[in-house]
Image (cartoon, rainbow over all chains, first blue to last red; front, side, top):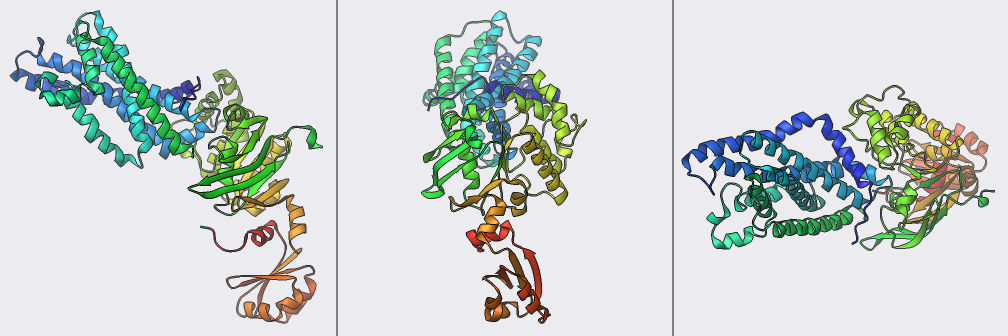
Length: 255
Length: 308
């Protein structure tokens, strides 16, 4: 189960980057539109009814959470729908595997690429909320590597589902049973302190919760309370998820 | 003799099973440098599985494979760096132009952008698509896509080309053009391994071929030699009303061997003249007299029943 990795993974990444570059602007606007609608709709609409949340306006609180949720969504969509298209529908992976590139390189390249796309999406939202004045201090720059790490984690998790998927329909389960609940359990829309104690135990184990615990303080110019714990948790989940994705993809394609 | 040069591909006692069913059951063959070698077999004979094993895309249960001097699957990646592969199904990148397809594919081989770009005009020319580098893939016809896939397989200037059913689904014009290109490559000294179930294709292109069935090698040799060795030189096909009855009753006097398939009787004969003369008096029987082909050998050795 040792991954057979080489620098050829970069060629896979570059292939996806070249496709993205052709449609960069519409893709970016598409990635921004949905979270921005939620941010302004809920932020001003709902936020107007609320006092400050954790010492900031509700829209500022939500803005930091939106960065995390968008990062997760961008990574998941790329690792599920787009990677599945390349693996199964377009046979792009099959073509790559005929070159001196291992399947592990392909999976690693896809994971890196989905994380890159997530960083572009999360970073773009970070930029918008910085311009709108919802961030403070230079620590916000440290949010970028965190977004990339979270991107890797959600990409690796997504690739597990892709390796198991018989068709696109299968992804609905992942979104309904994992992604959507996570948004509600991990402090994106409201502080996790609002959750019952039992539910908070679950929340502590979810990658989005660790992402939010890192990103929100950084956005507000503070150091997170336990950064190394969050980073270690994300790194561990990324590594384990990647190895599982690798194993399942090998089982699917190298028979 | 070619013994002096190492063989581009040696397969020895290859075995690969799926769910306990053998797809390849002890197959051995070796290519000679500069030849076109064909793997022929009905559907499910194990051709594609054999190719996948040879390229290191799946691990065999047992047996050894040496591809361009490298043990496979252990060093398959190193071996594939000098192989060009044309898959059974087109997998060109639909998001890219023709030129970008070459560029992106060449990068998988670790080639620099400059090296690849320098080769693109010549590859387009080879594909009969000169000057069309900026065109999109989606607008190409099936034949153009096949030619482009073949040209893409040459991006790394490979020593060995592996083609899995290269002309399946193409019209006659497109097939002839592919054959012409493959002959060009053979003249340039490349070695080709191809699978096909078109017998005319194999007869035309292959220096040697192996007929494979049930994952085993049935027979191996040059197409002409196989025909001479395994089958009578002439075939008279009889069909129409009374053909089968006549063949059962009288065919034996004139034929070395008769095979039946549906309403048609195939009379295999060493000397066709007596049979043809005899049939002149029976105008109700429709006849077709032709020389024996590789297809007759194939059907004799693998049987006429359908493989689904």
